[in-house]
Image 1 (cartoon, rainbow, N blue to C red):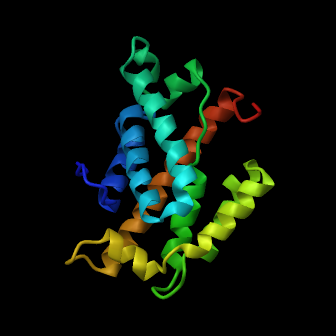
Image 2: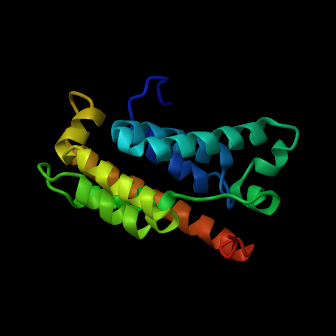
Image 3: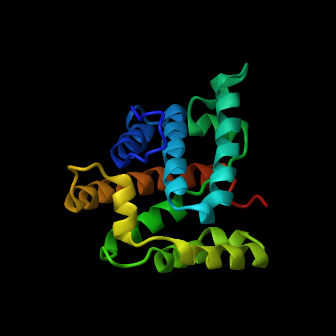
Length: 193
């Protein structure tokens, strides 16, 4: 389990992402919520530039958790149930693509270029021009890959360990994203405004 402190745990994220699709043929909502909660810790490590993303994710998590624990909780046990019952938004592709690019960076490389490219090709397409420019500009403040790893890893964990774990987490994210997109497609949600 993740600790209540705000330290991002890539291993825990991988476990939760894998649990989203491994518990049954349906995508498990509780593991999905836990994975997004861990993503939010990652956004916190990225600094104030991701404040708007973190705020949006927190808001959506609170809504999901409220629905999950509410009188209609049976409609929110799996993502499939939720899609049938409610409309949702997914930001997995941004996260997966960014982490995939992060894996390819050298330790001394700044995260800003990879983050800007990923943002522009995913989330940025849905934000107004002024938000896009502010987000791109703020991303210049992101650390290097080594700076981020120092915030994430424990004192005995190596870069190699995190590179291997990062690949596994990205694969799990893509699997969750692809399955969720298929559900959206099956229920004609991709065409909604």
